[in-house]
Length: 154
Image 1 (spheres, rainbow, N blue to C red):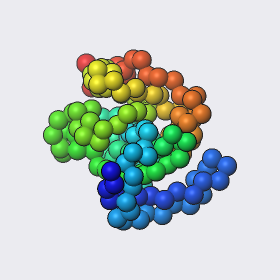
Image 2 (image 1 turned 135 degrees about the horizontal axis):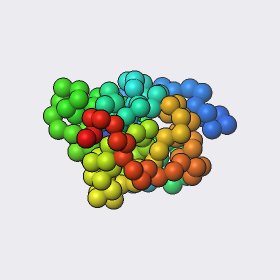
Image 3 (image 1 turned 90 degrees about the vertical axis):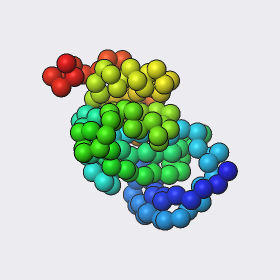
Image 4 (image 1 turned 60 degrees about the horizontal axis):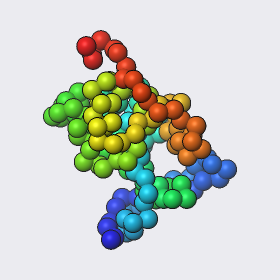
């Protein structure tokens, strides 16, 4: 199955992104994607991991294939209640059909929701998205097992 996307073409050298270019209307073979990673980010370029999942201004979705090559990257605004939208961020992001989440922090309700949906959540080891993605690909990120206990979760 093929569909058209806004695609960020990425050139990597030594595991580091050295060039990126947005291209509109690129056809992507959906079957070539093996993982859809969702990462809350601070900026519309999707370069900085947000400190907290539900309060992140944006969500960056990265599709990778079985060889861990980036097939697609897009960043969308958080439509959750903390950003003028409706509902909780963890419910809203399910529409992106992520297979993996990587976060710096997340409340217990969000973590339970993703766990119930069978979506693993990993703890980001850096605020830099490229570094976090590299750590995920190398298998060095820890799975998040407890939600944060900040006052807004009580």
